[in-house]
Picture 1 (spheres, rainbow, N blue to C red):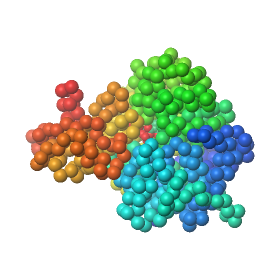
Picture 2 (cartoon, rainbow, N blue to C red; picture 1 turned 30 degrees about the horizontal axis):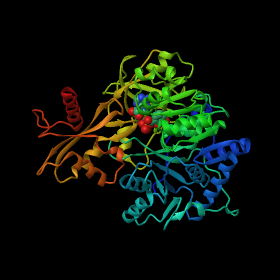
Picture 3 (cartoon, helix red, strand yellow; picture 1 turned 120 degrees about the vertical axis):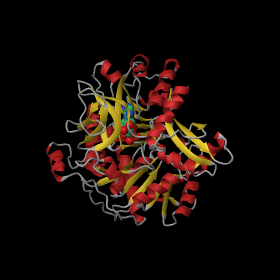
Length: 538
Ligand code: J2J
């Protein structure tokens, strides 16, 4: 098995410890300590369940016993694909307690993505729910097993049919849980994927716990905080910025929303007196639209965080007058670096910028395409290095040489400029992915699927600005033979067993791609031209 490595150089690691960022905390020790301190306080509300901190620890220990009794060994990877249900937390903390390594998949992922995660991580098990949102994940598990018969262990939350039932897990007093090494990789998060399928992001206890501990402080979380998980729980934003882990750190309450729609979220805010939540811009727009006529009392809400994609100043301005709470812009990435506007920042900074880094030791470089620093205030490529930013992807030498500089800076692919106060303003990006409502989609990946259609000669996929989604996916397609219909191509994409959010929103048929005199342009250049042409025509 390929070892899990975090590759922080020893001198950096020593400094991060010395400065008190890395404190030797682990997820399991954290939960135990909180269960002792806040035992009877409510940790989690989801569906009709309310779990105290003591309940959460108890259920996580039972889960840990169950996983170990399946023959899983510390260090084994387990792909977890669960919706926003309480069991997400007993599974994940159970894995931590057993020193197993969760690999987070989204509920929207399908066979192609899950098989990729299983392969890349060499996973020994897959945990999913029986059904969610009208989709039967047991059917998915069945077709995954046909493709990967070596996947022995499929654990189902709910009616398990022929699979292993999570509900059958039992405590075993004979099992002794060994403490985890705080510098070890605790889990694999998934990247937004700018080229091809998502990469796996190794995060250690030390670095990740620092990021949400410091985030909890920046967001002023306390035992009284109630955080609504409106986005999918597997996303890095609701997980750690400060997210539910930040809330558990502070001893507050995590409230799970099965859907982020105002119809579902507003009653929960009223009932549970939610104080803070995080949304992507399209959802924030929906909330702003729905709030004025809502009969629900939203007055408990103190902070609305918006991130994952650029929140435009005109929309940002409306948050305080409409919702009566503070907006916090969050510009983060699963690879590490997270920027926040601070709660007491002047309104202009909150509205106009995407915040400043968590840590004094987050190193920020803004460089031109040759790698030279740009003049202060100019836009350039954002590179970063710091106490919670990864130095490598897992099992991916190609991505590692592309995505990191020689001296260990992560190339974010974002184009930013920095204000005199040190705040970052996102201007765009250098890479060719599409940021569709905060979901990052690789143009390469979608093109590859379209090219598999017998009547597609060539395809180029680009992002087009969209008033609601921020960006939508537009595919330019050169047909061959009988020209396919747009809807048929979309239907074809669905047969490719990929997440639905990757299906192009729009398909434009063209006879040919314009070529330069040299006869060949890079895909990047081609996409840029098609995009410009399309926007010019609009
Ligand atoms: C513009 N672009 C943004 C913003 C992210 C907190 C918040 C978000 C994420 C996330 C996260 C943006 N304005 N406010 O992990 O902990 C784009 C950038 C970035 C990429 C990362 C967190 N906030 N982005 O969105 O790994 O392009 O993380 O590099 O999904 O989203 O995407 P992801």
